[in-house]
Image (cartoon, rainbow, N blue to C red; front, side, top):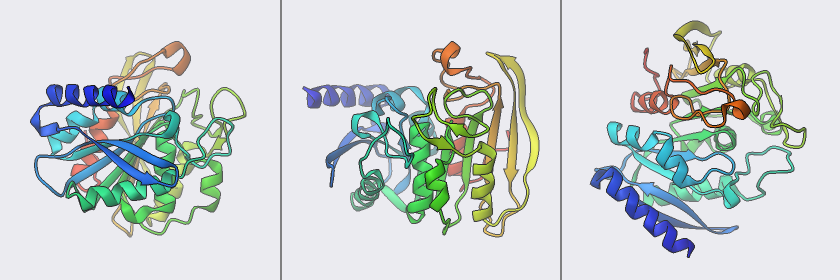
Length: 300
């Protein structure tokens, strides 16, 4: 039954997004058994490719359909890939009660090899992006398998404390982050994840960005208002750029003031519980434009 549902979903995706986004289901052998991913190849082989990691309890299909990465991938002629976490969770390295014990680092390594072997991805231009639980796994991959990726995008996530404590950055790469100052699940100032103390802890967001910037050989950040408004509780978006870097790879943090646990520009689900989204900026749009520009976020 699960295979029938997935096949139906893939057919629907092909009809919605057209021939330029032919959806395929990849099965990858891992130590945790067969693992899956939805792959939408670009029109040309060996294309720039982004791997998008869903949030906790959010499916790959939902992530594909609602967050805008497919549309931006088509616009920039990228392949887009949506792996499936076991039980809709990722092992992001937190010491948490509610998390996965799967070897997700190993799974993503195997997935990257499969994308290259099948001619989908340009091995020099594979990027990783993640939302929430998936964003924390993306940061873990930056620490443990940076050689696989040309850049990273992180939405409503920060460095898990246990991962950051042993992280030795060894390969600079451009990184774009989006975080809200009023996120009730990933606290901007760091600390306990979620509404209890059982889900591990994360670093403060700006500490995470500064740590990544030091790994890239960057100096202090510059700060500028990126967008201003008063929609859905969001007052403005401030952009912090660590751009003067010996590696020529910067780190950019978009601080959504008043923003909650949302994919900015695309969701405003349960705002009384998760906090406000915003229409002032689209996180997937900015991230994909940066990847298409070799890591340089657009000025506007």
